Image (cartoon, rainbow over all chains, first blue to last red):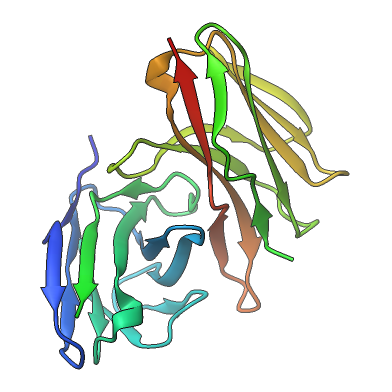
Amino acid sequence: DVKVTQSSRYLVKRTGEKVFLECVQDMDHENMFWYRQDPGLGLRLIYFSYDVKMKEKGDIPEGYSVSREKKERFSLILESASTNQTSMYLCASSLTGTIEKLFFGSGTQLSVL
Amino acid sequence: QKEVEQNSGPLSVPEGAIASLNCTYSDRVSQSFFWYRQYSGKSPELIMSIYSNGDKEDGRFTAQLNKASQYVSLLIRDSQPSDSATYLCAVNFIMNTGFQKLVFGTGTRLLVSP
């Protein structure tokens, strides 16, 4: 089975802190994605990557950056955390050419105080 | 207009009934349509995909697609309490950059009562 592992299930940070959310997949998938999920707003795409060192903005990239130095690892960075970035963050991966069958990690609930 | 729209529910059905979940999307050129199920506190998981007009059946689940009406639905026959979850409709969109992205609706919460 594909496993997508997110480093933390719960995280509490203060405003202005730099926050790193880590995601690792073990199935050699080319595609990796970061979504955030908020009540009433659903899943929204922040950034994605189709290859190592490649990144593309999703629908809500402001305030975020990403890093993909290795194929299996995709990191989401909050440069200066703000309270409106309190959310559930979900990482996902998929095979090349199949963006639709996403395998999700268990999520990180981030609270910014 | 939202790219993918769903009624948030909850949709309540008795055990054994048919649950009907609906979704509309905004982009006529979209070609791929999916239903994900998300249990409370868990991550979404893919349960159905459909690419052409008509019906696609998989066990108790049937996905229906009408591209002319830009409408996708999911029918769950013989609903079970274990089907109680939020069902997310997802549609692929082609971005200005040429890359594809998967856009999710906000989900419909289904409650199946014993």
